[in-house]
Amino acid sequence: MPPIHRWQRVLSPRAFATEVTDTLGKGQNVTDGETLVSAGGSFTLGFFSPGVAAKRYLGIWFTLSEDVVCWVANSERPLSDSYGALVISAMGSLLLLDSSGQVVWSSNTTGIGSTSVQLLESGNLVVSDESGGAAMWQSFDHLSNTQLPGTKIGKNLWTGADWQLTSWRSANDPSAGNFRYMTDAEGVPQNILLDGDQVKYRTGPWNGLWFSGVTEMATYSDMFTYLLTSTPSEVTYGYVAKPGAPFSHVLLTDDGVFRHLVWDHSSRKWKVFFQGPRDICDHYGKCRAFGMCNANAPLASFCSCIKGFSPTSPLLWKIGDTSKGCRRNLMLDCGNGASTTDGFVVMEGVKLPDTHNASVDPSITLEECNTRCLANCSCLAYAALDIRGGSV
Image 1: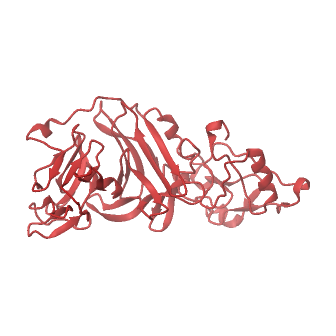
Image 2 (image 1 turned 60 degrees about the vertical axis):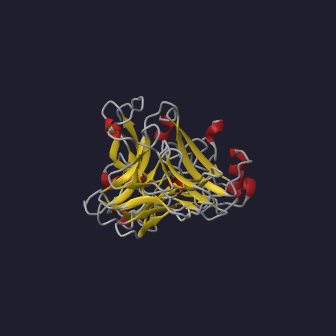
Image 3 (image 1 turned 45 degrees about the vertical axis):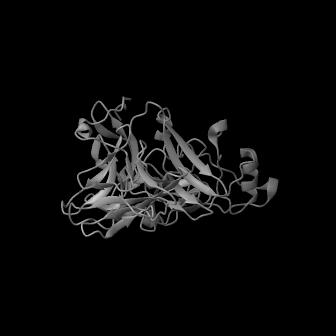
C-alpha cells in the first residue's frame, strides 16, 4: 500500500462562495441548495442525490470529497423534488419537511428552552438545549454505513441501545441493505460482518491492542488510537485519530465489504487502510471445524487439517468440498489430571477461532489456563486475552 501523507486540513474553495455557518437556530432553516459547514470546514450538511436526480436526501459528507456521504437522515423516505427544508419545530425537534410541509424525518426530541443544531468538526450533527447546553440528540448515535473517528459500534447492555453500520441497498440507494457490521458482545469481543443473519466475516477477538485478525491495525497505530470498551454495562468499539492524522472513515459497502479508508493528500484519493474480508480465507468458517486455511495455496487445496486431525469426509475433501471440516484421529483423554496423554499444538500466525462462546478469566496465567483446559473435556484450545504483557 502506498504511504499515507499527513497534511494540513484546508477548506474547499467552493465552501467560500457564500456565507457559511455550522449552526441552525429556531426560526431558521436549511433549504435545498443551502448547507451547514463545520467550523473548520471538514464536513458539510445539505441535500444530495446519489443516483436519480428526482430523489433528494439530507446528509453529511466530507467537504473535500462530496461523494463520501457519512450520514443520511431520510434514507428510507427520499424527497421527490428539490423543495425540502430542515427546520427546528416549536417543541425542539429537528424536522425534515417536504414541499407540502409534511414531516419526512424527525429527531424526535423535545427541548425545554431554546434549541439549536450544530454540525461539529467531527462530522457529528448535534441537537442541543441552549438552556443547559446538553446534547438531546446526535447523528453519531444513529449510524448509516459509515463510522467516523469518535463514533462507536456495539451495545449498551443496560439500555439496549445498539450501534451498528448498515450497508446501502446500492450505490444509488441509501436505504437499508443486507449487510451489517457490529461488535459481538458475547465471549471475547470481536467485530463481525453479517449478510442477513449469517456471519460473513469476523475480525478475530480483541487482544488488548487491536483485533487479532487485522494486523494492519498495528502498522498504523501511530495514526489512530483503537478503543474497545468491555464493561457490565457496555461493549463497544471505536477509534480516535491522533493529531496530524489524515481524514479517515470506515465504510460498509453495498456488496458486503468493510473498508477503513484514509485520505491521501498527494493523490487526493481515498486509500484502503485495511478491509474485510481480504481474501478467501477471511470468509467465516471457510475450512470449518479444525481446518486451516492458506490463501496462498492453490485454489483446490487452500484448506488443510491441523496436526492430529483428518478430513471428516475424505471423498468430499478430495473434490474441494470442505464443509464437513476435520475430526480427531484419537479421542481425548481429558479429565485424568496429571496422567492425561492429551496435549496442545501451538498455532502461530493464524486468526484465533471464533470467541463468541469463549470463557474468559483475566486473573490467571497461560500456564493455569493450560491446566484448566486439559481438565475440561469441552475445552478445545486456549490463548492469551491480552498481549500487552508480551503473551501470545
